[in-house]
Image (cartoon, rainbow, N blue to C red; front, side, top):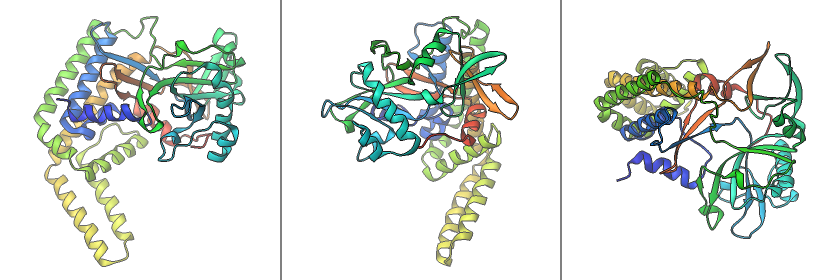
Length: 404
């Protein structure tokens, strides 16, 4: 029987690809089933990086593009369109003409979609595909980094750099738009679309107006291959985490069933990322929750409302305090999953198609790609492998130059 976590991820994949969970958050999302699935993913990625043909996992690169662009043929009327994530609105916003774009969108997003509408039909897209927009012509600049002349573009947090005199650099210089495709959709209507993670870009027509690629992880050099010792170390960590999970399964499932606490745990986790703290604690979460609830209570105007909120706070703090040692075990397991993930991410980061940098006050700092996505090709499940202490912290605070 399909477990709850598998159902959860598969439902996301079959519906749309607009949000994906971090692999370590599986413990919060679906309890012990989620932990088991996360460990299975980590094990499969480990086997893949060790050269095992038995792994059912494919890895794709998370390019830091923005905005998301959907393009293709509307199955309901046979017309070509472009869209943003508003394709999934209750009333989908599909753009067949420039007039549609100006009616549905504004600002930088509208400008980008106009370029997309003018050039993407040349690719001969069959069905509907989704990609991350990397640049349009006006985004390209020429800079010197480490003494080398490069074309640069920064769609979101990461700045990408390509040598001017390279074959890729010349293609990018000539293009009116750059995009990385990562998802395809099929269905008889827009509302019935289901997603899969292989857009088969090799079937698209070539045009100098569009630089495009897929997100598949390509290690032609073999530099991301795990050594025997590395493989043994990671598998030992996975087994240790699995044993720890078994000892806490009952509480993990009870905690995961309490949506009021889980939502706050995720907000607390994101606050730690912003602070550069990699591991939560029961004491830290209890203090965070108590403070947040008290602020909310103090803002209420009536005594009855204050009493209701105070009762909720007392009940949840009682639960958390009573189970503080067990909650610390959950935080330890969450940290263990994240740590195993980082071992794999560090290997994957050794392969980069394009230079990636973060702008600082002192110039440019080399950074890794945004992260990776592990996709089980048998079930079409997908989970993020991202170094949250590096990329997510940057992404929380970065200024964006486009509108949603």
